[in-house]
View 1 (cartoon, rainbow, N blue to C red):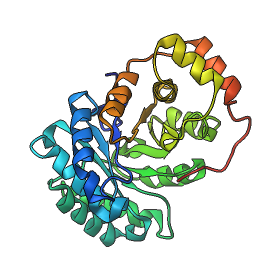
View 2: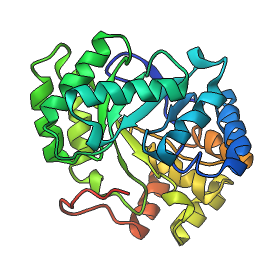
View 3: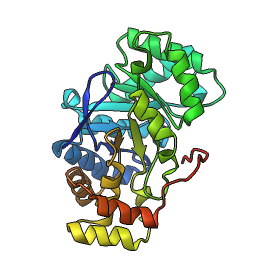
View 4: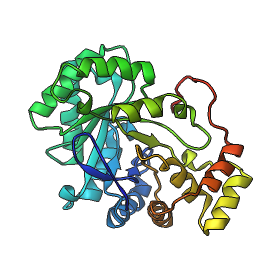
Length: 282
């Protein structure tokens, strides 16, 4: 699978695995664990979770899936804005580490911006990194102005702009407002975008263009949507599925290259933004 290099130097697959809503039902846990394990076997060795997902139970599902394979996994989790003060960030990370049954988090993100000053969160992130409990940090659901404020803060620390590894945002063919400003801003700054819900949470849009492109390449509409997200070299995505066949389809999409004709047809059904829009989030 194609790789993307983060500012910290790690190479990650352009397709990882999301875990939102995993852990909510005990009866589905076995399927969720098996799906994540299959994804690892197929090269999707980045797993994204969060302390918010199923009140921490998603992290426990991940722990089970990666047991005995921790060194093969690039592990991402997120802290709630209510836990974003300096000491609270450290305490939240330690709880996540316990649930994940690991001694380190590869990438720790602020889930979205809340009322805590960003400087407080950054200080907590630095404390964690210096203690070896996290290897890198980033943000999620930040718009251009948020990113500018965040990067101004990180300018004063080691690594500067390269200290921030990603901004995880909602991005798919039907939600592409970031194409106007955020995506080019981050590309210029050298900070990749992590796309969540690239498959629109399974609610695939009805589109003659998507169906036509899928038929031409002998793939599914979902695979076309993933390939569309990955058309930019500064984007990687974390689709979520608990179906083994869905995992296989997602992994195969990493090799799908869309043509200029494909992209033009998709643009006609899903026009690129002509102006800045408020950042959308779930």
